[in-house]
Length: 522
Image (cartoon, one colour):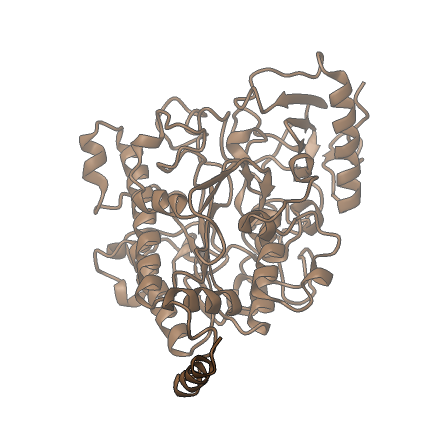
């Protein structure tokens, strides 16, 4: 190189302003880097009693007869922009146990909150022939030790300590009426909008002040929404408006937020959302099904409105959204005939040991980390949410807090990193030593275990095992205990061990007063 050229290049270097390597990147690259470094906002969108087939997202791979019935464009968009879990399960076939698992990371067998809670010390199990429920934690979760309640580290408090603005909107149902656990703010939330001990609203109608109008049902009246009383504002919409206001406040405070949106929809009472009802009546659905569909569409509109507000604030890329349900879809009562068919091809529904009672939708979107349009068949469960959120939020002692839990951090699966080689054959546990109170397939006291393609159920009433191959029989039509005794023997031993490890309480034989244990399969 000639001396004049070297001198020219040196002069050019001196005259050219120095730029940091990040500053030389395209604006979108800078945004991506910032999103990787900043803690994500977290939206946990929990829908009450939403069944596996209650959206337009085809979890069987292709739309079936139920998917087109409902209009859920925002759930579809969420699935298209993120990851769909086809084999995600609620921790329980009823609500409170699953909700407690969400904020504790512990299985219902371990928390001993194994049934839905109501008033302090109240037994909510219905009578079942020859069986009594165990002495379970019927007061739910508590921030301080008390009888018949689970106490331990709670997700909202841990996230608050990590710098998050923690916001609860809608149904809480973590603690019984008259206990500290009924108040979400006692459990670590900075903001509580509408959350109490109630498992359902008094009414969805603003014209009824979201109240049942009875003294007996007053505990179900939704508080904090007086500004909407006497108006036509449906409960789902009122909660959405308040959720978006809470997001605005968190942004103004320059805090990352954890938003727990837990709609009462689509739980009973199945009251019509008038904004959407007519289209389903025009489609020829029975009245109760048209009302149910309107609840679903209102919930979906809420999802879209919340995400639109996040986008308005420029936060979409680094906001983790998890959409799920607390148990299988209602099918044993209130719905139009034929009953026990509303989660097809899954068998039965809420309250049941069968797939319709526990398999639910889960959709995850996080543009900064999760690839769009991914479908996974990885068996996963509510227990996984707690360790996952501690990890993504950067909670310092996350590993110590989750040691011994059966839930697994899904962050590697979400981000496309090599998943745990054991994940496909991990053991998923359910323990429901109660009778929900409505007759139907699989609606009785049970424990169950899924590992790989097989699922084993033990029904305590008749002391019977059932075994299904979910890879070929998702509708659980063919009991394989007689044709695959080796598999049944192996899973029965694993189920017994899992229950012992969790310290599970067993139902009581009403005649002997002794706990009913799961025998070895022979």
